[in-house]
Amino acid sequence: MDEQKIPLKDVEQSLYSKREKIYPRIVLGTFTRLKALSGIILLGIFYGFPWLQWGDRQAVLFDLPARQFHVFGLSFWPQDFIYLAFLLIIAAMSLFFFTTLAGRLWCGYACPQTIWTDAFLWMERLVEGDRPQQMKLDKAPMSFRKFRIKFTKQFIWIAFALFTGFTFVGFFTPIRELWDATLTFNLSGWETFWLFFYGFATYGNAGWMREQVCTYMCPYARFQSAMFDKDTMIIAYDEKRGEPRGSRKRNEDPDEKGLGDCINCTLCVQVCPTGIDIRDGLQYQCISCSACIDVCDDVMDKMGYKRGLVRYTTEHALQGEKTHIFRPRIFIYATILLVLLAGLGYSISQRVGIELDVLRDRSALYKETAEGNIKNIYTLKITNKDSQPHAYELTVSGIEGVQVLKPDSIIVDSGQVQNVSVSLVATPEQLQARSAEVMFTLTSTDDETLTITEDARFLSPMKR
Image 1: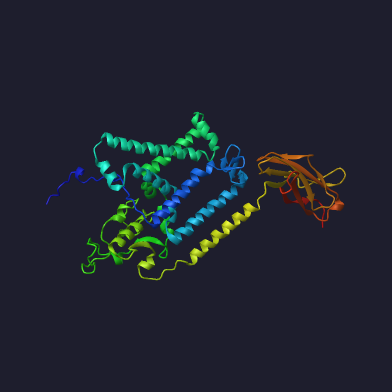
Image 2: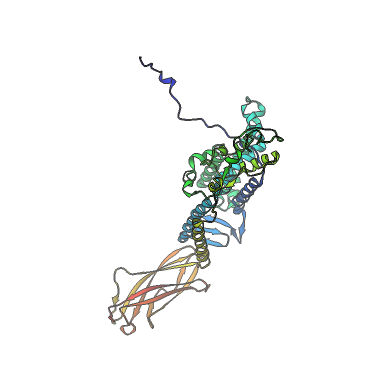
């Protein structure tokens, strides 16, 4: 039999599927209230901190031109970059700890993408109504009413996004000065760029892309499984209890109809911001927002069934096995996290506003003077990490009677690094070994708390 040739146009299939807009239904419950509270607190921190004052300056200000980073009563300099490294390590360890313990808590309750998307959804509902009203409006032909509603929503979105960009720039430029410059159209080029860039990113990611950022752009959704195990708390549907699904009246006994507790209302799908069906099992698109738990518990209450058909649980618990929440890896992560936090806190508490590095002259280990004495030359690299300029007094100990050749005054401006050449001269009688330890102590003349000591070696041709 001859093979029939099928036209190519009949077998072609597009590899691209157009995104279908998701309309999350409003739900109220314990977890969604906690999520809303988390969003209010975090957004309050972002929008409120730049307006707080600490003395005569902004409480939180990252002053890049002056190379000063103010966080309430603390001021950091580029030389304090190690603290940023510590914070990043702590953030990564916290992510490991909380993910292993209770899944994607970060995604559901603290991720900026989630927080701002919720804010944009709230504004959308405020203008267009809940899920049914939005779907009806989008399907309706264009009219003056539809244009007015859509225009109002876009106007509010854009205004909020631009204010978000303005606030972001306010962390780097004093926000009160930025406000005056904005009103007088006197923003600098970089301020204008970052205001619109951050505003546009917020508008696009939270207003339009929404769940696509979590599904396609965020790497965390892909590697989270490496941190999960069968004792990790996840949001899951109890299949043994819920199946087989089926609709029924409230006063009907599901056992008589051979049904499980799931009434197949699909509300858990309608409230999901990523549009998944939690009844299909754990999926990487799930951000653990817990909306499906609250809406399912509400349905169970109305039907007179026990809550928890969709709940926080573990894979072991679903299989009827014992769950070990506090297991070795949890204690290991917690211990490392506590050590890092304690170390960072101690380091900051012991931090002084001065830094001293002592560098030996590389051209010669030592020099012999005309008088037969031994000279060592050092370069002192002094960093003033205080907000005020300081004059410093230098003292040297370790070799009794050593002669110190140094400048008459050592003055370093705020945030500056200054190199000071210092020479030590010792007689052969003062030296007991080929190498001796010397201590350089630098103390501010107007603030004795600003003092630091650094050690170095004094080398000579003397033999033991």
